[in-house]
Length: 377
Image (tube, rainbow, N blue to C red):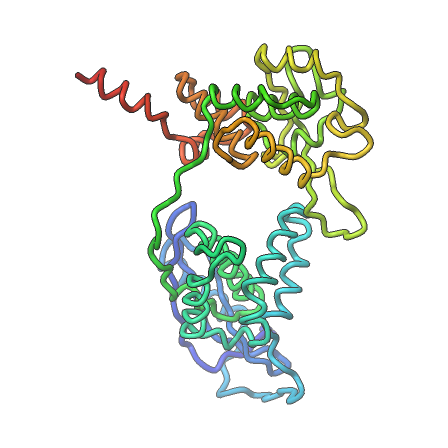
């Protein structure tokens, strides 16, 4: 046998982890490459400990030669261990065929703001459990500079998850142990904020003061289709049918190419959907003929800041509670739940999964709660 690696010890460790498919085991041990570099090796994803142990035996038997210590001891003194900043650049580059530009753009922003300033210059191998706990403690004390309030538990958990996934990549690619596995996530610090929605009556009050035909149509479609605003910004006249709308693309301004102000991508659900629309939207579309090439905006898509500003102005004029534009989607789904719509139908109408609909929107109007209690008797 021509060895591919040396090993100086028969020691190994088994690591247990939970995946979507169930519990699996990884076997971890040290190897020495033929040029003298000592590395951690991991064989992953075995359903039992016995299979993991057997994989280790097979690997060592077929690929390794047992020696005392390092037979080469070759180490370039000028070679430095890669830092978090350096490997993050490599990791981001590896995502190009896995994520949309908008997703990579968001991840880059998170790494730039919350991770690189604190951990960027530290070698990945030196990210000890104690150091990661300190980073996490500081993160959970971070406040939004705009509002002065602590960030939500979900927001902080997403930041933590991005670091965790990066360290998993470092482990699988280079054998640096992910010590984040040993760092317990803090428990929820604050009560989850209540979802902000409008009733149909509140929307009717709002839309009654919208005197611009384009914005009247835009806000009506957002409320009565529950689609994401990027999907409406990307619409063309060809997408508008007599009783339905084709949603097969979305517009994002989270672009990696700084020379382009926006990009047309597939929808978040990665699928084309021809969605029937109610008579209210059908009437609206007859009154607003639309523009080209963008149905809303013409030569250029609507500017997001402008839409947000006009929405706020109309909210104030109508005297209705200020909500986010995205909350019109929540309002639509809540209205359907109030009307007794099946969750599968709701999921199809907004191009989401049933599981996500139940998780995100599975709540009733206050009046529904009382109605059900009254019916119990």
